[in-house]
Amino acid sequence: LIGVGVLDEARNALSYVYFFYDTDYLHRGLGIFSYLQTIAFAKTLGKEYFYFGHYINETPKMSYKKRFAPNEIRVDGNWVSFK
Image (cartoon, rainbow, N blue to C red; front, side, top):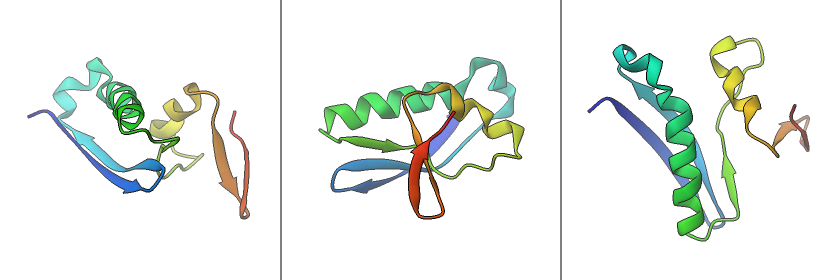
């Protein structure tokens, strides 16, 4: 076992709660791989949305979330494009 993901399922979406992994495998991009697999899983379940989970702009480790498009982020109660 090198990684574990925790998901939350809603009626029409999957949401990532947390993903953690053995840092000996950092070079494999397990976070991105996990997202891609979860997006595919959401599609097989017929989900319309996938939520990437919590994002902190000032945390460089979370910047990979910007690579996925199209996407939106919730700001002051409104959904806006995330770039």
